[in-house]
Image (cartoon, rainbow, N blue to C red; front, side, top):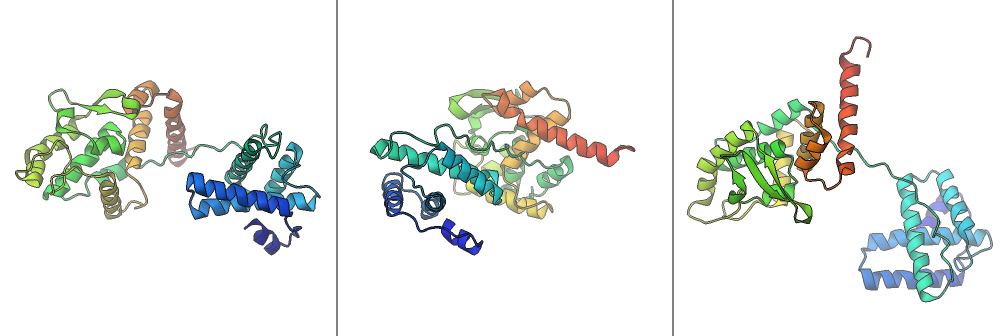
Length: 313
């Protein structure tokens, strides 16, 4: 809790005012009853609110009378004490939700957090494998085994198309046209798109449909393209487990996720000169701004290559 941390840091906090304690408890009870929040989330709310209430008590104020200036001063205090932007953003969110509740309950006539902006959090750059790492990952499954052949086909199709994992495991046999070399995908919002497969993915797909899938299914009928021995479609969780296993086998960080190949697909396309709008269409992004994050990844990778290989890098 905030009070415990302050005490350990040598900061003296006045006891919380009885009215503040009662308000916090009522608010947390409501969150638990209406939202069913986890204990850890409720504890985070308590920590944020009690920390602010303790700060106000030191200043001779309380939660009922605190103004925008008090909120800004407290945030500045926490930043000076070393709070990170993500922690500060969470604190603003906690206080905002609390004061909106106070407004609804008629406990206050204004919201001191209404014009308080949380810090902008930079979007994390998606991780991408190098092209040699992708090659090692794709070659990890044992294609002499029907499960290994299926997994090789999965990885090849994922890297060739950049599909979301949910889209990949949700593919049906009817969605694939080996003659035209495309796969029909229904993405977010029910938007449909056609994505080219490429020669290598088509090769492994034909191999899997001819040998691996019939062996896995036996006489069992199935609409899913990628199946298990039980005849059902492969789940996202199962594929996640298998890709981590192949990553470790290939000497790659096993903490990668199936989404890493989607990131790698986009990054490698851009590195080789693909148009950003074309990548947007292939990924199924409704907004180009979502795709633009990959330009930063590609630019960062090109800068690393320049520094590593240019004589004056």
